[in-house]
Length: 309
Image (cartoon, rainbow, N blue to C red; front, top):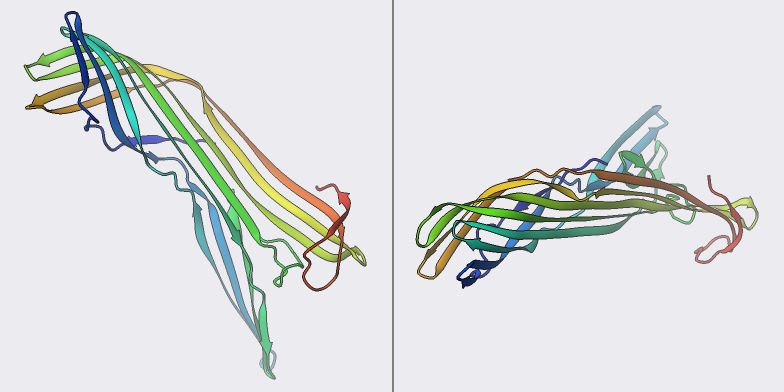
């Protein structure tokens, strides 16, 4: 699974509170907490689609004309990886025109969803001239494959409901160890060059799947029925090692009558390795079951287990 994540910092220029300064003869210590609004771009949030197929047919046996019309609609299944407010923390020490500092931030977001798709019962009619009807097929398209509902005699439509689920967890954190060199300075403002080393680690976990039930009355013999609980499930993980690389940037501060404005911009290059893993599970849990024939089939007794293929 290849993916990329771009974390957008929508708020960088607002400082949560005035920096805490401790002035000593040897230098100045500064501690800052900055709120940042984070969002996720580039991560594939499209899980699949709910498809609904409808076929209308008419057989005019008087005029020997058979007509058929069909159509399919698709409703996307999307996860919503919500944007969030997080904090950037920075501790720095300055003396004259040089300094050093440590800063970092973290961001984590996730989402999950579940749904159920059912197929309506077929309807039909006839008269002296023709016979006509409408039938449906509703299901879920996942993993670039259309997976229709299996045969299930417990349902009026004889098509199994399709239950689907998906979840995604994304986490990113970074930390900078940097030096500071003042390029320009006035009484209440200055512009600095920052340079140093950045480390960070993103991780991305995904899980998707669906389940159905196939059921056939008296499949083996009278009173013994076929019952198959079907599960399709995929799990994928992009596990990044600790990444590191150089970082360089500029930052500036200006003050006027107790009000302060701070801006910073930096660029970094992170180098590391990613371990990508994934599994796909297809389970057929097949049983011979016994129970009443006709009416609501609410309870069954598992009589014999048959290994799924």
